[in-house]
Amino acid sequence: LLDLDVDADNNGAINEADDPLEENPGGILATGTVRQVALRLAPAGLTGTLTLTAVSGGSRIRAWRDAGKTSPVTLPAEWELSGGYTFPTALYVEGIDASAAVRDVHLRLRYTAAGGQYVDDNIRLTILSVDIVSVDATDDIGPTKINYRVNPSGIAIPSVTFTAPGMTETRAGVSGDFYFTYNQIDLQYGESQIILQYLGCEAVLKVNKEGVGTGQTEEIIIATIPVDPGWVHWLISHRLSEGYARITYSGAPVLPDSYTLHVGGSHVTLEADETIDWAHEKHRYHDDDGSYNEQAMTLYTGEPTLPPTTDYRKFYDSTNDRFFIPGKNLEGIAQMESVSLDGILPLNLANENIDQELE
Image (cartoon, rainbow, N blue to C red):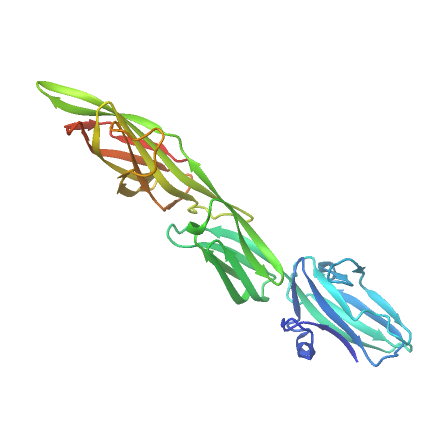
């Protein structure tokens, strides 16, 4: 009995169930990982030679005596048999380069008797890798796709596990081009990793969410106040700052027109020489494609501020959770619609808009 075996049914063990599968579909392993192959020869006491040869695909693999890859085996490997067997009953094959075609690594174990007669047993292997093809964040409200590709085509991975911020998903029988999705809203500030685990290997995509705070831009609003017998112009300092985040990916290209700017909070400071009773302040975003998310800003009443809130200084805030495409001249715009100063409503406000560039 001569037998060269591999775990062809991917159940974690080498046994008789693998025999009808060891050449088709054969065994699979990922680049950078090792898989055990078993060598058997019976009955005991045979003489002659035992030879393990990479008939094809030898450049795509390395052979080792141990799973830790400390003792290499050069193929073809030949063992002289003399009474007691002197060959290893297990070797470990490491995937080096992905196969060009399914089952293109062909290993042959040959026993040659002293008289020259020989018998062979064969296994086929496919060395696979998974490429991270691209990041597709082109849907402003939908999830972000991470696109993958199995190399070579035509081989299925028994199980893969996708882990991203906020989620984990396991899928069986993955092949060819496939994708997983996650929501960029689940990203925390700083660096995160999106990991695809398969066959003891990982495809890692790094994501960085960088918080950005703009400085304050200032405009002076001119409030026209009726004072008998004429008019008085009161000046209001109108200042706007914006907070947002840039999302960048390392390890795969990002598709054009992907939404990787995440806006957050907007902050307005009003300051005048008169008491500011109240103000109606609105905020919106604008880029080359239009205006978005107009909303009323609310008076800030939280923790003490620096400089502090006074009768003459007020703060207004708004928050958003929207993504934008970079490179389209995104800006935040705050607009004062009305204000009461010392109990007086101005008849007119001039220069009531303030713009703050976000990129």
